Image (cartoon, rainbow, N blue to C red):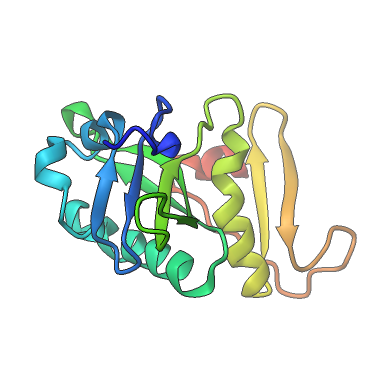
Length: 173
């Protein structure tokens, strides 16, 4: 890692990619999170280092940031120890390459440990774009919370539809 890459100095996983998604630089936390050494990551496509189930999301994250020059976010599951995935909110944005004066894409995991609701940002954006509503049910408080999208609270729902995990059906009744 070049000393000029301030963006890679944090404790959270981070990498600098070319606009086509090739890893140019990464920190040790990103290599560890991907379950590989830094040498196994450098020069490879960012999407290629993810499990098949995550590849399209990882690639579209980078492509969106590279193509639109806008901040992009996705929830991706890093492979965890013992096979349990670790969900992380990953942000991607274009930055200036201090070495070549060109553009790179900076991808990094946002620290959501103190704000777990931030993991819902991509879902909020997707439901709003699809003209759907996102609600969260808390069985402890026996309460529904509107997280955004359509229709807004207070508006009559002509055809309400609820989807719940099988293990949550009992507490949602």
